[in-house]
Structures are given as structure tokens and as C-alpha cells.
Length: 398
Image (cartoon, rainbow, N blue to C red; front, top):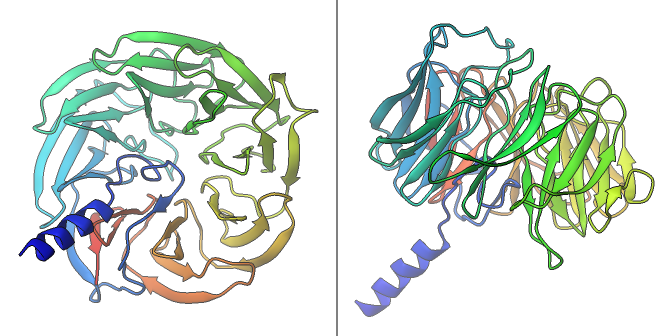
């Protein structure tokens, strides 16, 4: 009995939650094992549940609860939905904001695209300029606020980030751009940093360094690093005309890897030990072919993986930018790739997933298909992959 309890405890300790966009590290990695390699509408589907309304937020998972946001078709009712991880049953469907009117988002966007972030008993949801709120696991609203800016031309995009007692949000509208830190207990503004640019939709990334933590925050024309407790600017890097940024940065090897946005996307590798304008001094390398406008990059060991919006996957050396391979996967891509169980998972907008082995040589392991459009990024928890389509949430497991 003691051995069984120890085994169960060990398996539980190995299982990870997926509490925010791109998982516990914010970089698309999971330590879960025994994930399915193949699936279809009839194979390796533990459950499939219809999600009411429309939204492209990715699943956020803590324990036995999965949280998503959604909205009615007219965008006037913005909601948080809780799903039981074990059964797929919808436990809660809470209206967080009721609007008199809602602007129509981009055809590929929704009124509920930012992913919730979970911590303890709290769920933090963000609907761009339409509202930000904190709920409990029982669905009670702790606080609500609206940040005064516009959503740009395309609707809400970037997801919130937690750091100590702060909820950090990029607010890059078309007419006003700033980064804000809200008190996670009250929703009150703790600091706000204005910046000039244009619309952007990126999710910032916390990088923890011996010399001090940094909040890496891409915006239009320029990315910034801030001291996350105070909002003090540490450094910035220019990339000319890049705007409408969507991909979340990734970090490794002393560098942060940033996609610069429209119109011609470039990936830049920036060393993190600079101060002030580091455009000329700390740019390690850049890549111009096969760079994504929407999916975030994925760093696995010494290799950096990208997939462009039109389905071209690229693997480069993260330290130098030297290309190892480039392959057309096909389809259109908005979801960010995932690394889990020793594999890399890509998901196209058409419901097709391609699974490959990481490495300097391209090796496809499987191709899978589910029904419907899939623009949200995958999540992983308890040896299962969770995929949101335009109508359903799937739990895929062996």
C-alpha cells in the first residue's frame, strides 16, 4: 500500500497544470508524459464538449478545472466558462461583462481571444479594452475594471501575465499605447508606462535573471523590457515598421526571440544585458524567411522552431540563426506550437495537427485531423492534450 501511495504521489507530482497562455513557463513547454501521438474524431478522444458562444482563448487548466472565455455572437455578453477536466461537463458559464454594443473584430479574431490566467482560487480574465476581471473558482466576481484604450482595428488579442501581486497587460490600441500593472487583489492600477507606436496584440513574457527580472513587452515598431515591479524601462529595441505584433516572445541562451509583426515579419534575437536603446549593440542575429505573423516561436534545447501563417515550418540554431531545415506543412496557422513528451505539435486552422521529432533533421511522426476551425493554441495536463475548435473543446488522451 505504501508503494502504491508513493507511486500515485509521484505521478501526481509529475503532472503539470497549464495555468496561462503557452503553459507554466509561457513558452509552450510541458513536462507531461504518455501523451497521444495520433487522434481523430473517433480515436483517442476521451471527451468532446460543445462550448457555448464564440471565442479563441486557449484553455487554462488548474487541477480538475479548465477555464475558457467566450462571447455571444453579438459580442455584448463576455463570459467565463469552467469545464470539468475529468468529464467535460460545463460547471460554470458566468457573464463577466454586459456591453451595450461591441465593435466587430477581425474575421480571424473574436471578442474573447485573450487566454485566462489562473492562480490559487483566482481566475483572471481579460477582454482587451472591453474589460478585465478577477473571479473565484466558484464563479464569484472579485473585481472588474476597464482600461481606457481602444482595441485597434481587430479586437482584443494579448493575454495577461502575473508577477508577484501584479497583473500585467499590454494595451496597444490604435490611438493610445501603454503597459499597465494592476493590483491582482483589487484591480487598481499600480503602474502604467505609456509608449508611442501603433496597434499590437502581443502577450508579454517574464524573464527571470540573476541581475533582475524583466518584463519583455513587444509593441508596434519597438519592443521594451521593463522592471516588472515598478515599470521602469530597462532597454528597448527598434524594428522599423513592424506593428500588429501577435507572437509571444521566448527566452533562452541569454537572448529573447521576438517576432516583429506586419508587414514583413522578422525574427530578432536580442541579448538581455543591455540598457537603453540596444538596437545597434545587442541584436545577436535576425531571420527574415518563414517568420510568423501569428504563431509564437518555440525553443527546444539549442533549436528554435517557427511556423509561418501559411504553414512553412523552420528550424534554426538558436545561438546563431543558422537554418537547419525548412518544410511546408500545409494549411494556415494561428496556434502556437507545443513541445511535450519529447515531441513538437503543430496545429493548423483547418484542424490538422502535424507531430514531429525535435532535431536538426525534419522527421514527421504523425498527421491528425479533427473537425472544424482551430485557431486557439493547445494545452496539456494530466497526460492529455486539450484542443479548442470553433465549436468544441476536446480532451485527447490514450
